[in-house]
Image (cartoon, rainbow, N blue to C red; front, side, top):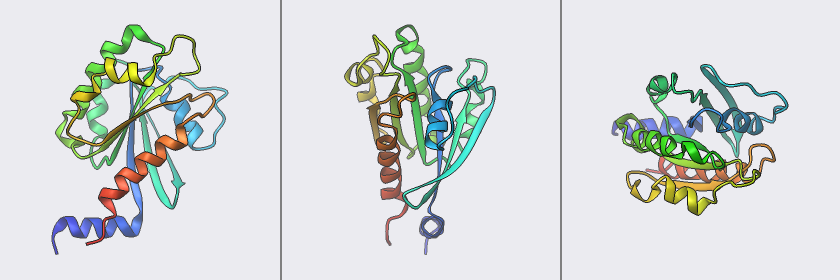
Length: 184
């Protein structure tokens, strides 16, 4: 029995996944995490480090790490890559002036060796705001067609209303599960 088989069997028993949620500051990561966890979103302040929430979704325990996106914190993101099975990249669809930074940071992440194999969910957040780019526009601006080293999906969403958040986490859990919980 190989090491990967042993790890898969352990994971299958545990049914636990490590998800890393990243994006530029003010993209809505913490609001999304609070929504996932059923918490109030009345008061959300910028994340100056990280938040960890663990919750169950369809019989799987999800450990979601929300790491601050300020420019001064991005160099620390790599400290959270170990054992990450899923990456949620949150985009502020209405912040057109920072989409180049968003694309650059995303492509740097997906080319990081420690994140190879991690499923990628891109949440095009703030769709409830006037002028927000559509999913097709986000795909184009972020040059998602260049990402060929992993499974990815992009969904429009609103952290404020909760629109499409469950659909996103459902896709991510299914995609990771298809790789992790395979029978021998």
